[in-house]
Image 1 (cartoon, rainbow, N blue to C red):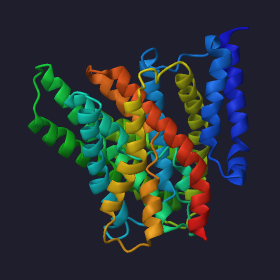
Image 2: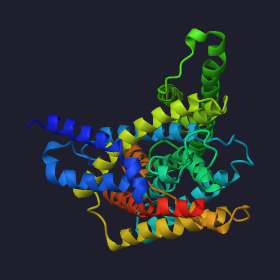
Image 3: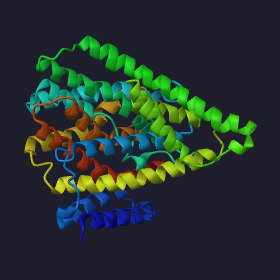
Image 4: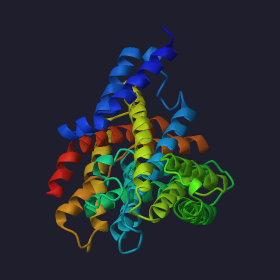
Length: 406
């Protein structure tokens, strides 16, 4: 049988199962990400000769762009379902996590990588940059409900908004690692250029483009269409269209597309917040997101089976455990000092620093830009950390969030 036919069948079965998987996993209290990860391992054990290679070194461009696509779709989905309007007061906890906790996590992970794992400064910094942001893709179990359900806790809102913001804010530090690698090779660059261009210009451009496109889209959908009823449309795919436009346009201008997508989503969400169209957009985005998540988790499981963690040692295992269970929780708790929420909420927010497919994208992106020492080791560490996060957080998210909900 042709490999293509087997691939089509497997993709069909994956999408078919996703129709019932969220309800099933909600019932048993285990995230569907755990099941698709295990399914990927089994499928590649049985049919690896018929399936595309999931190893980044053998399919670099495909892995890069698939993870890129799922991250921007997830960012739009996260933004569209946030009911709380943006303000420094409303989003104070999220901003603490992004600008304090994430920064501290980068420093701590880089220090562990440099002193404990004997990585070069550039490789250690890259490790910190790719692992520091929480993931909007695999965090659905701890995120807010669909638009206008008005039943979400501060914990869910904080984790959702943090995941939306920090996936873009980690990009400058990925570029900082690239800059250090370039300087080590004697390339013509500088830290001043990194600061002015990658840290300041690209962030500001992403924010500005996101606000403009979100406002323009909101005006066209909720104001302009009222004047010309024949233009009124409630097709949910508009959210995906805005995702692609915001990302593509911002990247063309050399800004951070991740930031633009999320900002455009929460800006659009601010228009006529009680309108049912927000639910329609969220529903369509969520369906597309689930399909891609399932496919990518199958590939991730296949990569684990085919040996992407072959460079793992006891020290790298210890690093992954330290990062997930000590570094992220501790740094998040530090950032939440003085916050007026219950201690159990602080503990939950700190614990659910879910690692995911965004880390795969950042690592692929950095390796595309320039060569790093210990690339195989970096793949092994990042992949192991993500796999542990999928298992630990996937099993614990539902019961813990239920407990907090009570």
